[in-house]
Length: 178
Image (tube, rainbow, N blue to C red; front, top):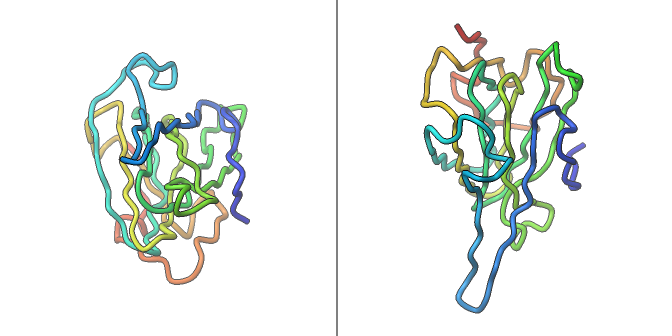
């Protein structure tokens, strides 16, 4: 079952979860997400910043990269994030993490975090709010030859995405990075 508790850093080797701090008043809030000087940001740094708006019940899974690191942040909505260590050489091979990301004011079980997803870690998500926005930074510009996929309902991860998931053709196919 989905955890409401935030996993600890490195429950999957190389996955780092940065808890974010908001500074608010009657006008709203300010929240710093990531700095280039954060250890969390790591080597290689920034190459691309992307934004995905998704509707309720969208499932995007299973994706992974051979070389690229991702940093995910959900500023609007509620998303179940699932990570799975598929790296046979990793000390945490086979470990799966599940946690909600998003706006904790509207969704108390969601966590306001930024998560670092290293190469080789399968990642996926399902939207639980009417809409959700996923903002993500990548360490490399998009290269389709770096991206691997397993179908959302097959492959090495045993995971139930729930009823009536909305998926794309990309999330129903297998593809290995070149």
